[in-house]
Length: 338
Image: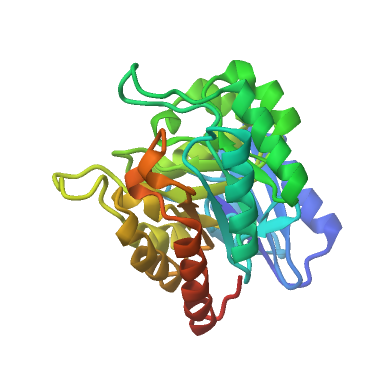
């Protein structure tokens, strides 16, 4: 439920209404103060609230019921678009953010070379996998803690903040200490114990959409984190599983439009995982920016043919520079910039 206060309602009037509601028990009131209007977002069992009684207060404009099960992630509770700070980079707003780097960290030389190249081309955040969830237990699983240290070293050399995937809740303390943004991968989108733990940190969270997740399920996963107190969430569309087998996944660009309507959270697109084919990255990057994405996550490798993970979907640094030049033009056309 949402209570829209009348323009000019005083803080005393707003507090009185909020106190009256919380006194009923089981309801949390989240006030959002705007320059013109104040909105009270009610979370909890609102069945005991009588809308007619609330509307009798002269300071109340109207009462609105929220149909969606997600509340904190709902744009109705937070009409303005949220911005999430990762290091010195802001994800959301008018500027686009580009996360780039290899699927997995393979060596100090590899990650630093790629980090320097993507920064020069205009990337604002360095991505790289230290812990890799793989379908086969015999595939390369990442360099783990050693890879994490290599990412930190690359950050020292380039100044780029880093984002990398967290696999286990037992590593949260280490990630909080070393990482600028914690990624929750598609396979862990509904690992609710992990999401609850991440709600207790204040680190930015990059939440990837699950392989077969609906938009509502995706936003409900964000709600798990936000319910714990952490509202620094970036959503990432990375393609979903359908009957199509030509591409690795099916890119759902319509999800960007839907999320922008339903939620205030920033949303980016990963065209690398969305297709699994390096030659599709550039056109899909263009399309993602055109439909309103707040940024991109792109896999870049200096030697894709010999990559230990996902070489087929990784582009080389020179190709990444072309993508960046390309999307700058698209960004200008839709009133954004990098």
